[in-house]
Amino acid sequence: DRDRREIEATIARDVLDARRHPFVVFRSGPIPPGAEPGIDGSLTIRGRDRPLTLKPRREADRAVIETAIHQPDFGIRPYTAILGALRIQPEVRVRVTTPWPE
Image (cartoon, rainbow, N blue to C red):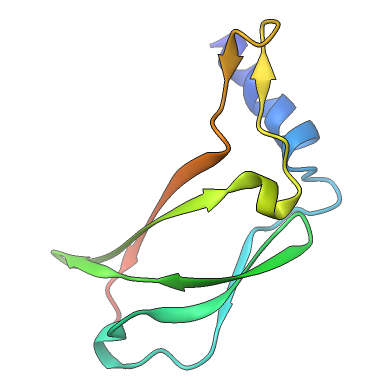
């Protein structure tokens, strides 16, 4: 538990620079009914914007979006620890769920 807290604090401080950039933001225009073929928008991490198309799917009463983020695109050097023995890949998968809009 202590190691996990330490890693999370290091990622927030050093990798995401959360003091200067406390939010990850996705902005889009109007979302079409059913979100077909996807939701076009812009993702901002660490003050860097990149275009992104998200493709939600319905799971019961939830909207689920899964996508891959290439960390260097946002100025992020992937996290390493223990003299490089622990490494996070440059591409990370992100999964977000939210209530399905009615």
